[in-house]
Length: 207
Image (cartoon, rainbow, N blue to C red; front, top):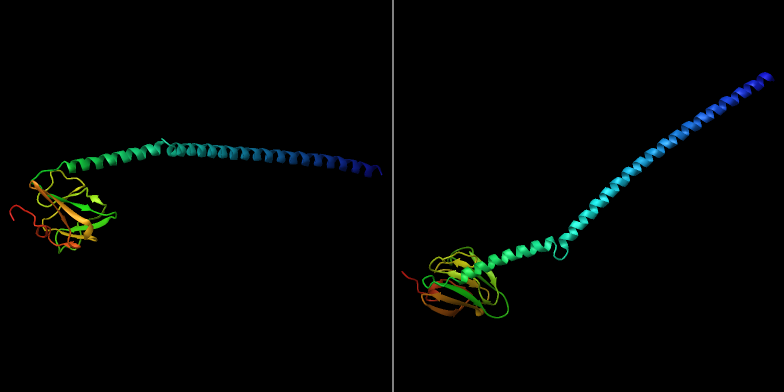
């Protein structure tokens, strides 16, 4: 009986030691895992904060661009101003050319609708070198049919004296000729003008 009691006592002591050891190891593992989770959570929080700060910064930049008076509006206004300035300068230079020995004509469109007009160097050409829809009123373009313009702009067009003209609505299209200290207004008689100088009896020096 004494031996049995001795062995039971030793067994209980060993069991307590083993249980304590296992509890200690389990607690250590839990603490380690907890620390790892906290470290991982901190990294996630740092990344979220960094992304949030960058996102807010980008939103601020976009807001600065699109708000009234912002960078985007200033850019558009500046670009429009430069384009308008270039266009206005071209129109001024075009209108300033009134030399008598450099005759030209302009289109005048009546009514309320835009009218398509196309020009070829001659009737036999396969394609138009100039064509557009003209708004009612006097065209901005000047078409020089004898000499080159003094200054080339987007509104000074050089054409041959025998140029071919076609329009979709001749009843609404007039040509106003200037040059050699005279001028005249003529209406297109049909959808086509096969030879500019012959059709409108233009004076061409040397011809």
